[in-house]
Amino acid sequence: MRSMPYGEVARSILKIYADLCKLEELQSQEKESLELVRRIVKALRDLDRAGLRGGWVMRSLPLDILLSSDARPEEILKALRSGLEKDLTLRKIRVPSGKIPHAPRWAFPMTPMMGGLTPGYRYREGLLPVLITVSHTYGPFSDAGVDRVALRVAKLTGAHALVGTVSRLYIDYNRPESRLTPFRRKIEKLAEGGKVRLILDLHGTELSNDLEAEIGFFSGRTASSEAVALLESCFRRAGLRVSVEGSGLVGGDIIWYHSRPPELQGIQVELSKPARREIVRKTAIALTEFIREFGRDPDKWT
Image 1: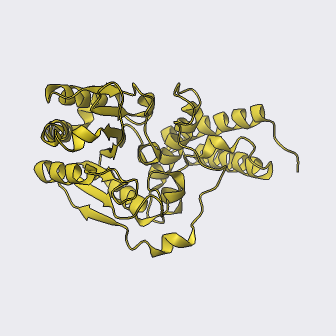
Image 2: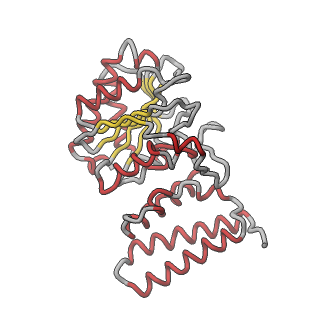
Image 3: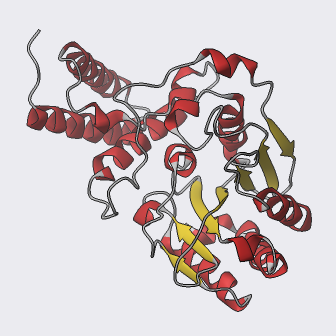
Protein backbone atom coordinates (compact mmCIF):
# COMPACT_ATOMS: atom_id res chain seq x y z
CA MET A 1 0.00 0.00 0.00
CA ARG A 2 1.39 3.37 -0.99
CA SER A 3 2.48 5.69 1.84
CA MET A 4 0.77 9.06 1.67
CA PRO A 5 3.16 12.08 1.72
CA TYR A 6 2.82 14.46 4.66
CA GLY A 7 1.53 17.32 2.51
CA GLU A 8 -1.17 15.12 1.02
CA VAL A 9 -2.24 13.97 4.51
CA ALA A 10 -2.54 17.59 5.65
CA ARG A 11 -4.62 18.56 2.59
CA SER A 12 -6.90 15.56 3.11
CA ILE A 13 -7.48 16.50 6.75
CA LEU A 14 -8.31 20.08 5.76
CA LYS A 15 -10.87 18.82 3.23
CA ILE A 16 -12.45 16.56 5.86
CA TYR A 17 -12.66 19.52 8.24
CA ALA A 18 -14.28 21.72 5.57
CA ASP A 19 -16.83 19.00 4.78
CA LEU A 20 -17.68 18.58 8.49
CA CYS A 21 -18.36 22.32 8.75
CA LYS A 22 -20.65 22.15 5.71
CA LEU A 23 -22.43 19.10 7.12
CA GLU A 24 -23.19 20.97 10.36
CA GLU A 25 -24.83 23.76 8.36
CA LEU A 26 -26.92 21.53 6.07
CA GLN A 27 -28.79 19.35 8.59
CA SER A 28 -32.17 19.06 6.84
CA GLN A 29 -30.92 18.77 3.25
CA GLU A 30 -30.71 14.98 3.26
CA LYS A 31 -29.42 14.29 -0.25
CA GLU A 32 -26.52 16.74 -0.06
CA SER A 33 -25.77 15.71 3.53
CA LEU A 34 -25.56 12.04 2.55
CA GLU A 35 -23.10 12.87 -0.23
CA LEU A 36 -20.89 14.76 2.22
CA VAL A 37 -20.97 11.87 4.69
CA ARG A 38 -19.88 9.48 1.94
CA ARG A 39 -17.03 11.80 0.99
CA ILE A 40 -15.84 12.12 4.59
CA VAL A 41 -15.97 8.35 5.14
CA LYS A 42 -14.02 7.73 1.93
CA ALA A 43 -11.35 10.27 2.91
CA LEU A 44 -10.94 8.67 6.34
CA ARG A 45 -10.65 5.22 4.76
CA ASP A 46 -8.02 6.49 2.33
CA LEU A 47 -5.99 7.84 5.24
CA ASP A 48 -6.36 4.55 7.08
CA ARG A 49 -5.22 2.51 4.06
CA ALA A 50 -2.26 4.85 3.58
CA GLY A 51 -0.99 4.05 7.06
CA LEU A 52 -1.89 7.45 8.56
CA ARG A 53 1.49 9.10 8.15
CA GLY A 54 1.26 12.34 10.09
CA GLY A 55 -1.27 10.75 12.46
CA TRP A 56 -0.67 13.61 14.90
CA VAL A 57 -3.42 15.48 13.10
CA MET A 58 -6.10 13.28 14.63
CA ARG A 59 -4.87 12.81 18.19
CA SER A 60 -7.79 14.81 19.61
CA LEU A 61 -10.68 12.88 18.08
CA PRO A 62 -13.33 12.45 20.82
CA LEU A 63 -13.27 8.67 21.32
CA ASP A 64 -15.91 8.67 24.04
CA ILE A 65 -18.52 10.41 21.90
CA LEU A 66 -17.71 8.31 18.84
CA LEU A 67 -18.20 5.12 20.89
CA SER A 68 -21.42 6.33 22.52
CA SER A 69 -24.74 4.90 21.37
CA ASP A 70 -26.64 7.84 22.90
CA ALA A 71 -24.88 10.71 21.14
CA ARG A 72 -27.00 12.70 18.70
CA PRO A 73 -25.66 13.21 15.14
CA GLU A 74 -25.22 16.96 15.70
CA GLU A 75 -23.19 16.28 18.87
CA ILE A 76 -20.92 13.87 16.99
CA LEU A 77 -20.41 16.39 14.18
CA LYS A 78 -19.50 19.20 16.59
CA ALA A 79 -17.12 16.95 18.52
CA LEU A 80 -15.41 15.76 15.34
CA ARG A 81 -15.10 19.28 13.99
CA SER A 82 -13.73 20.59 17.29
CA GLY A 83 -11.21 17.75 17.52
CA LEU A 84 -9.89 18.36 14.02
CA GLU A 85 -9.86 22.11 14.64
CA LYS A 86 -7.58 21.70 17.65
CA ASP A 87 -5.26 19.33 15.82
CA LEU A 88 -4.96 21.56 12.78
CA THR A 89 -3.83 24.44 15.00
CA LEU A 90 -1.71 22.35 17.39
CA ARG A 91 1.64 23.01 15.77
CA LYS A 92 0.97 26.73 15.46
CA ILE A 93 1.00 27.21 19.24
CA ARG A 94 4.30 28.79 20.24
CA VAL A 95 5.31 27.03 23.44
CA PRO A 96 8.61 25.52 24.66
CA SER A 97 9.40 22.04 23.39
CA GLY A 98 7.83 19.29 25.44
CA LYS A 99 4.90 21.35 26.74
CA ILE A 100 2.37 20.07 24.20
CA PRO A 101 0.46 16.91 25.24
CA HIS A 102 2.29 13.94 23.75
CA ALA A 103 1.17 10.43 22.94
CA PRO A 104 2.61 7.73 20.69
CA ARG A 105 0.94 7.93 17.29
CA TRP A 106 -2.54 6.37 17.54
CA ALA A 107 -1.65 4.76 20.87
CA PHE A 108 -4.58 4.94 23.28
CA PRO A 109 -4.22 1.56 25.01
CA MET A 110 -6.72 0.10 27.45
CA THR A 111 -4.05 -1.35 29.70
CA PRO A 112 -4.83 -4.15 32.19
CA MET A 113 -4.41 -1.76 35.12
CA MET A 114 -7.42 0.30 34.03
CA GLY A 115 -9.78 -2.55 34.83
CA GLY A 116 -8.93 -2.16 38.51
CA LEU A 117 -9.91 1.50 38.71
CA THR A 118 -13.26 1.26 40.48
CA PRO A 119 -13.88 4.09 40.15
CA GLY A 120 -10.55 5.75 40.95
CA TYR A 121 -12.05 9.09 41.95
CA ARG A 122 -14.23 10.99 44.42
CA TYR A 123 -17.08 13.06 43.00
CA ARG A 124 -18.99 15.89 44.64
CA GLU A 125 -22.14 16.84 42.75
CA GLY A 126 -22.75 20.52 42.18
CA LEU A 127 -25.39 22.95 40.94
CA LEU A 128 -23.35 25.42 38.87
CA PRO A 129 -22.19 24.41 35.34
CA VAL A 130 -18.52 24.34 36.45
CA LEU A 131 -16.44 21.21 37.05
CA ILE A 132 -13.26 21.41 39.17
CA THR A 133 -10.89 18.52 38.46
CA VAL A 134 -7.83 17.41 40.43
CA SER A 135 -5.92 14.51 38.93
CA HIS A 136 -2.67 14.31 40.95
CA THR A 137 -3.93 13.88 44.51
CA TYR A 138 -2.15 10.73 45.67
CA GLY A 139 1.62 10.40 46.15
CA PRO A 140 4.33 10.01 45.41
CA PHE A 141 4.74 13.23 43.39
CA SER A 142 1.28 14.44 44.32
CA ASP A 143 0.05 18.03 44.00
CA ALA A 144 -0.24 18.32 47.78
CA GLY A 145 -3.09 20.47 49.03
CA VAL A 146 -4.79 21.04 45.67
CA ASP A 147 -7.64 18.64 46.51
CA ARG A 148 -8.40 20.60 49.70
CA VAL A 149 -8.55 23.83 47.70
CA ALA A 150 -10.86 22.22 45.11
CA LEU A 151 -13.28 20.72 47.62
CA ARG A 152 -13.41 23.92 49.67
CA VAL A 153 -14.20 26.01 46.60
CA ALA A 154 -16.77 23.48 45.35
CA LYS A 155 -18.54 23.65 48.71
CA LEU A 156 -18.56 27.46 48.68
CA THR A 157 -19.79 27.81 45.11
CA GLY A 158 -21.87 24.75 44.32
CA ALA A 159 -19.50 23.68 41.54
CA HIS A 160 -18.97 20.01 40.70
CA ALA A 161 -15.70 18.50 41.94
CA LEU A 162 -13.88 15.42 40.62
CA VAL A 163 -10.80 14.33 42.56
CA GLY A 164 -8.60 11.42 41.50
CA THR A 165 -7.72 8.74 44.05
CA VAL A 166 -4.95 6.99 42.10
CA SER A 167 -1.23 7.80 42.07
CA ARG A 168 0.16 9.20 38.82
CA LEU A 169 2.71 6.36 38.92
CA TYR A 170 -0.19 3.97 38.38
CA ILE A 171 -1.99 6.03 35.74
CA ASP A 172 -1.70 9.77 35.03
CA TYR A 173 -5.20 11.13 34.49
CA ASN A 174 -3.83 14.18 32.66
CA ARG A 175 -2.29 12.15 29.80
CA PRO A 176 -3.85 10.77 26.59
CA GLU A 177 -3.42 7.13 27.66
CA SER A 178 -5.98 7.67 30.46
CA ARG A 179 -8.84 8.84 28.23
CA LEU A 180 -10.85 5.64 28.67
CA THR A 181 -10.51 5.45 32.47
CA PRO A 182 -13.60 5.95 34.67
CA PHE A 183 -12.18 9.34 35.80
CA ARG A 184 -11.97 10.71 32.27
CA ARG A 185 -15.27 9.16 31.15
CA LYS A 186 -16.94 10.84 34.15
CA ILE A 187 -15.77 14.20 32.81
CA GLU A 188 -17.29 13.42 29.42
CA LYS A 189 -20.54 12.25 31.01
CA LEU A 190 -20.87 15.46 33.01
CA ALA A 191 -20.29 17.49 29.86
CA GLU A 192 -23.25 15.89 28.07
CA GLY A 193 -26.26 18.09 27.53
CA GLY A 194 -24.60 21.26 28.77
CA LYS A 195 -24.57 20.22 32.45
CA VAL A 196 -20.99 21.55 32.63
CA ARG A 197 -19.85 24.58 30.63
CA LEU A 198 -16.36 24.95 32.11
CA ILE A 199 -13.65 22.56 33.28
CA LEU A 200 -11.29 24.16 35.80
CA ASP A 201 -8.36 21.76 36.06
CA LEU A 202 -6.21 22.41 39.16
CA HIS A 203 -2.58 21.36 39.61
CA GLY A 204 0.41 22.20 41.77
CA THR A 205 3.89 23.10 40.59
CA GLU A 206 7.04 25.06 41.42
CA LEU A 207 6.56 28.46 39.82
CA SER A 208 9.38 30.92 39.16
CA ASN A 209 9.53 34.70 39.62
CA ASP A 210 7.54 34.49 42.87
CA LEU A 211 4.37 33.61 40.95
CA GLU A 212 1.58 32.05 42.96
CA ALA A 213 -0.61 30.90 40.06
CA GLU A 214 -0.35 30.34 36.33
CA ILE A 215 -3.25 30.01 33.91
CA GLY A 216 -3.09 27.83 30.80
CA PHE A 217 -5.61 27.58 27.96
CA PHE A 218 -3.49 26.54 24.97
CA SER A 219 -3.27 30.11 23.73
CA GLY A 220 -7.03 30.32 23.20
CA ARG A 221 -7.65 26.82 21.84
CA THR A 222 -9.55 25.54 24.89
CA ALA A 223 -11.16 28.68 26.36
CA SER A 224 -11.99 32.26 25.48
CA SER A 225 -9.71 35.16 26.31
CA GLU A 226 -12.68 36.76 28.13
CA ALA A 227 -12.99 33.84 30.57
CA VAL A 228 -9.24 33.80 31.17
CA ALA A 229 -9.13 37.58 31.73
CA LEU A 230 -11.89 37.22 34.33
CA LEU A 231 -9.94 34.50 36.17
CA GLU A 232 -6.73 36.51 36.04
CA SER A 233 -8.46 39.59 37.48
CA CYS A 234 -9.96 37.50 40.31
CA PHE A 235 -6.49 36.27 41.28
CA ARG A 236 -5.09 39.79 41.22
CA ARG A 237 -7.95 41.22 43.30
CA ALA A 238 -7.28 38.52 45.89
CA GLY A 239 -3.68 39.74 46.12
CA LEU A 240 -2.04 36.86 44.25
CA ARG A 241 0.71 37.09 41.63
CA VAL A 242 -0.51 35.34 38.49
CA SER A 243 0.57 34.94 34.87
CA VAL A 244 -1.11 33.61 31.74
CA GLU A 245 1.18 31.00 30.15
CA GLY A 246 4.16 33.09 31.21
CA SER A 247 6.26 30.03 32.02
CA GLY A 248 5.02 28.01 29.05
CA LEU A 249 2.51 25.99 31.09
CA VAL A 250 -0.32 25.95 28.56
CA GLY A 251 -2.32 23.01 29.90
CA GLY A 252 -2.60 19.23 29.78
CA ASP A 253 -4.68 16.54 28.15
CA ILE A 254 -7.78 17.04 30.33
CA ILE A 255 -8.59 20.50 28.99
CA TRP A 256 -7.13 19.73 25.55
CA TYR A 257 -9.29 16.66 24.95
CA HIS A 258 -12.56 17.48 26.72
CA SER A 259 -13.01 21.17 25.91
CA ARG A 260 -15.18 22.07 22.92
CA PRO A 261 -15.49 25.86 22.91
CA PRO A 262 -17.79 27.69 23.11
CA GLU A 263 -20.11 25.00 24.51
CA LEU A 264 -17.48 23.63 26.91
CA GLN A 265 -14.39 25.59 27.90
CA GLY A 266 -11.30 24.28 29.67
CA ILE A 267 -8.73 26.16 31.79
CA GLN A 268 -5.79 24.70 33.68
CA VAL A 269 -4.52 26.45 36.82
CA GLU A 270 -1.11 25.71 38.33
CA LEU A 271 -0.84 26.70 42.00
CA SER A 272 2.46 27.23 43.80
CA LYS A 273 3.10 25.70 47.23
CA PRO A 274 2.33 28.98 49.05
CA ALA A 275 -0.96 29.26 47.13
CA ARG A 276 -1.88 25.80 48.41
CA ARG A 277 -0.73 26.30 52.00
CA GLU A 278 0.05 29.63 53.68
CA ILE A 279 -2.25 31.71 51.46
CA VAL A 280 -4.85 29.07 50.62
CA ARG A 281 -7.58 31.45 51.81
CA LYS A 282 -6.71 33.95 49.07
CA THR A 283 -6.67 31.18 46.46
CA ALA A 284 -10.12 30.02 47.55
CA ILE A 285 -11.43 33.61 47.44
CA ALA A 286 -10.12 34.11 43.87
CA LEU A 287 -11.51 30.82 42.52
CA THR A 288 -14.82 31.29 44.33
CA GLU A 289 -15.33 34.76 42.85
CA PHE A 290 -14.46 33.50 39.36
CA ILE A 291 -16.77 30.47 39.48
CA ARG A 292 -19.72 32.45 40.82
CA GLU A 293 -19.30 35.13 38.15
CA PHE A 294 -18.87 32.60 35.34
CA GLY A 295 -21.76 30.46 36.59
CA ARG A 296 -24.24 33.34 36.48
CA ASP A 297 -24.05 33.58 32.70
CA PRO A 298 -21.62 31.15 30.97
CA ASP A 299 -22.51 32.51 27.52
CA LYS A 300 -21.20 35.93 28.52
CA TRP A 301 -17.66 34.53 28.71
CA THR A 302 -17.52 32.59 25.42
